[in-house]
Length: 398
Image 1 (cartoon, rainbow, N blue to C red):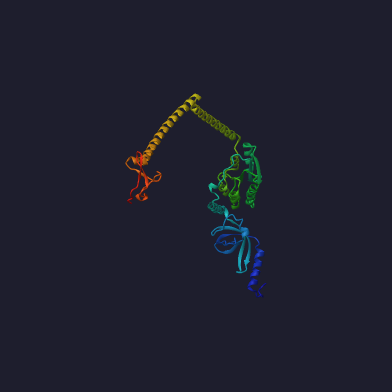
Image 2 (image 1 turned 120 degrees about the vertical axis):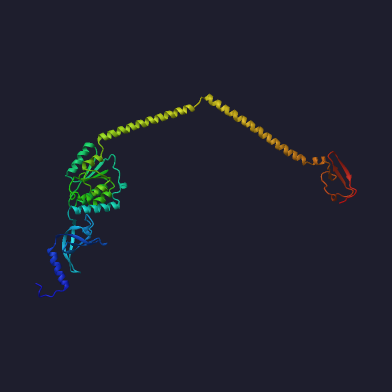
């Protein structure tokens, strides 16, 4: 067909691309992943190989966001997608639209990878788990609308607490789209605050059957729920990622219903216990009040005794006042006598008694203290301790 034509490299690659894309619109290939890389764009680039050949592959972000695991070198996988030719290198390339691990062993590896990663993030931490409400008014159930799980849950709830309101959000619990429906149901309950507690689960099955409850979106939806969640997936031997994240793990759907509500007998027993505690508390309080009243009565005395006590206290106070006044009088008298003695010692009369005299002018009011204050012929008065005389100055010797 092209034997007589000279083709450019670009034309040759275009022709190869057309042939490959027209004939390999959907293929499924099994192989081992190698050279796996995930740049910031979010696309997965890897090589798919077996013991003889290899082919480059790419899984774009819009497809890999639904993956149950993170691709790694050495994983044996099934790839479903289409073939094309990468023009820049002229290489055959597979555009992968769906990727899954081969066999149950592959699912178990994906389970362990996700479990360890979420555990490192703290989604299973015991301290973040919320307590279940003691008396829920509304129980939300996320499970299949036709399976045995919903029948078991409703049967137990009717038997144990017929007055509890049940809101059911039916979802697919296995197969394509099951995880997305479970996530939407949990988010719906939270958005409308439509329940006090949630039961999320299904009946037993294989690892593949239970896989929706091992999906990362389901785990993160349960973690983000503001409503306490009880997981009830499979049988007692089955443990899913949802069991690790939930606030409480019930071994079966029936057990979840028994956990979420108390039976009438349990409620009656609890009320009897509370009533007994109330009686004990009332008796203890009454006894304490009686003892307190008796103590107050012992302290309360007759009016006559109170008056006698007041009289004794008054007499004691009176005696203390009398002693205080006597002491004050004696102290003030002694101080007065001391001051009087000092005043008497320093008085002019006392000085005159010791032989001194006071010289004054003739009028007797002005004191002469020096010789130069007198003049010859001047009349002066001299005052003694007993009487006084008048003298005339004959001579002044200053």
